[in-house]
Image (cartoon, rainbow, N blue to C red; front, side, top):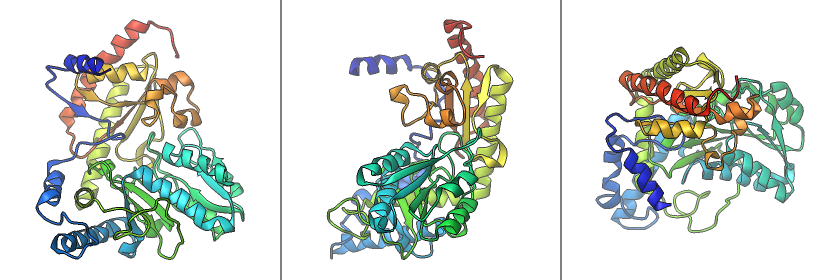
Length: 407
């Protein structure tokens, strides 16, 4: 296996232009975020924030300031409404499991959409082992939830509804405020969670304006360090911990706080919102240039998800028929263009994306999809380079497989 990887990497030698579009799975951390983080590894605030000595007090002060900044960026009322976790997956697990265990005396029903990310979908299904039931709300061909079906699904047994603000694969911006209003009208006791990892920093997002009870955000999806996320929990809501251990500055997640990563996450958030309108306008412009260019150069394509303002500013997802997605990611990688294929979380299993299947794509269309996400750090020259090499890669693959496939 290691030798195979070495051979693959050797094939990449000589690349002169690299364009990273796989921001669904990881991100390049900008230098200014790294510079902000570095002193906290060994020069200042490197202590345990619960201990009574200078490095500990410094760490405590830094972390409290980070709580405040992230709270402000999310629209939380108080800093105690934020819990830092090791990532989006952990935050979603805490949101669903912690809520269900704490609220089980009120009911045993969970409601989600059928296109939730894997770390929501699988946890909700896993809760059936503990006596809970899971109802999935269908979506239309653009990925929007059926609000009437949501209304029908919520009843007195419902304790939690979890619907992502933006779908991570096809960029659909859900009508969260309308969904919250429907849920609260049917059952005021039901809690509403949203995974906002693909909304935060890409579209306007405020927990107070949306009136959600819980919300998840992710560090790397705003060009922060991996291994850090956060969960918003509205003040006054009861939740159980899902892990046990030493309690530090936050009661819902045990262990020693990772000060450098928290600082990096906070800096990335600051940069995302510093010039929010300009940042999102640039991402949107690059996204549209990318999509328009692909459709101008190639045929037999399917655009996955909605267009315009109903789509996240960074997301482009295109199914390219007669060109298997995994093969295309390799061809593009050899030219220095990095994208992901199908569902980012299940691609190694070579299974079609559950999101694309849910919006009506057949297996061949789902397998031929590529997901690309723009950032404010990309340039128009980067997009031009992608549009230069992508048609060559597609035509090469189509030439190998011939004309068989979906039309």
